[in-house]
Length: 377
Image 1 (cartoon, one colour):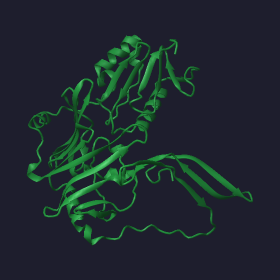
Image 2 (cartoon, helix red, strand yellow; image 1 turned 30 degrees about the vertical axis):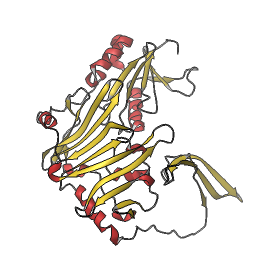
Image 3 (cartoon, one colour; image 1 turned 135 degrees about the horizontal axis):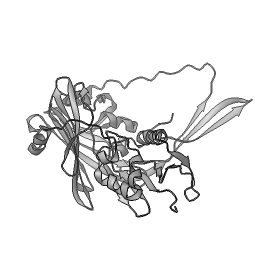
Image 4 (cartoon, helix red, strand yellow; image 1 turned 180 degrees about the vertical axis):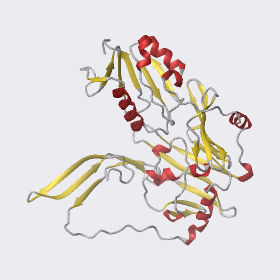
């Protein structure tokens, strides 16, 4: 019930009693956002009423019926079973430079994110390199172009990393060689698809793909995204297969010299620049600021100094913020930090040890805020 129809959570629950027994329950979800076919955006509110009925039988869900007209779609999806090379390029329709390129060439599974900041064009690459028939190694190339191993050697086949598993039966043909979802599906459908850099805000009802009937291939796809607040737009995907798929020679050269993995234990291991800022604030006590390695955020931490406080944050889009902060706060307590509150920050938990005070946000871009204990906040 906590995730229904693309909603992220229940806003409140009302329980109604009758004769001192639960009669029914009403679940109200946060306001959602979607689009009509003509592109007009609308907001909607979802409520579910659950009636308590004694001894009522349960109707088992059944799968979509097989659609014979979707046989070509089934064939096209087989291109992503790990037996053939493919490359998917997602271009943000608001900014042509913003690209997310996924490449699988039987030996490597690589995702390259090209984007633009105030500091100019940036590229960040993550991927996996096949070592032998039963193992592979995760790696990254940071925005400075430095290749780094990212995690221990993993036992398994590299093809298992390809997100797949969508049934062609959940699609309906909406035009010549064009398909869309047959009915509204949860956003989690994206976990079985390869999309672009803004997939976390994926609107399933907007997704459509186009098939080449002669080649039996997906040739293009399109979807819109929105966080319901400020982030919205669309991305167009193009596809290559077989001999046309190649990694850049410079990247292949770097990957031939993949360094041995050593797990970072401190902020200095993560980024000496971050460590230097911590020492500016706390001197030798900087060694007491906990560090937690997360493979989805590694080498993507940034630092900002406002002179009153230090912020360590990340723009990593694929990482799980709540999971990371759970591990980080556990590390804080294990390392001897104590919790307190400040009247200037109602509701916030402040962690203190010696001269170090810090608090954590709920999002990675919000980050970890640090200041010297006793300084006015």
